[in-house]
Length: 363
Image 1 (cartoon, helix red, strand yellow):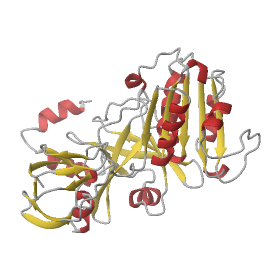
Image 2: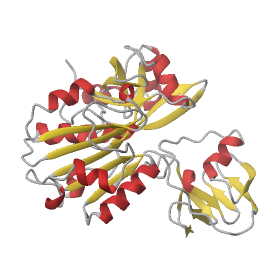
Image 3: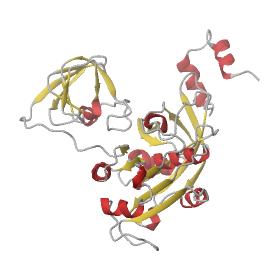
Image 4: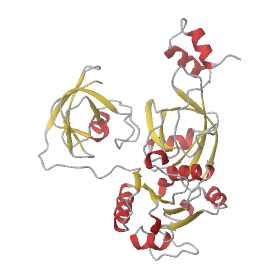
């Protein structure tokens, strides 16, 4: 049987990559010249509002490390939409898996819930993200403390799986916050992982009590972590935290208060943007390739302004992490709302940038 690479060599003089991909989709195949398409092979419910998709990619599957994310793209109501999701599979497994929560106003999560049935095809981008064991310099003897809130469990679950599959010898503790018992994910899977003597889980419901709950408050606090992770703290464990921006900010304060410096954190919601006190100003934005122009407010992120004007721009995380919406900037300056710094460079992350002059964007 010919390999995909051999088939491409034979077809290269006869067909363009774009036509190859088009006819592959028309024939119901996930094959592609360079892009990675994947077929949904199964799905499972994880909680009352979360579900897991198991995806079988084509030969262009992305390399990744546990803890990283991918952009998943699909055409929704005639528009190509991309969103970022954490991988919960292990790098050596044949299929990729992502677990996501159905958000009431989430265009992509609702579309996937309704349409991503076995047989459906989606597109997958390259993996990204720095919350990995390699980046943190974790060794197999280090103690690990994981702090997860809501959907923040997904990258941490992938990291925990990887640690235990790799023979991690240090103690591993997961503190997992969610609204109620019905919202917790990976119930059976975490119970199976607890068969490893070095791993334990403490679930904390923020809106209702749990049996054997040994803390008075469901909200993350220094006192709570001191009680639930007392055996780890003297060893200065590596701490991995993921949740909403407020949760991650609280986790950082807690770690600082406990004298723990080895904290690695990501939030799945945007941080509170840096703002300035300048008066609202309107600037002209020229889109060089499409020969379009529009007026935008200095108080509105460029991605939001472009979408409000009906201009489709591919995006993913919408937090300045995945760089999907990064756009070459031919002229002008912007404010990076994640840092408060002016950017006069050649590339602008539209989701976290506001105009500070007239701009020419390569769109």
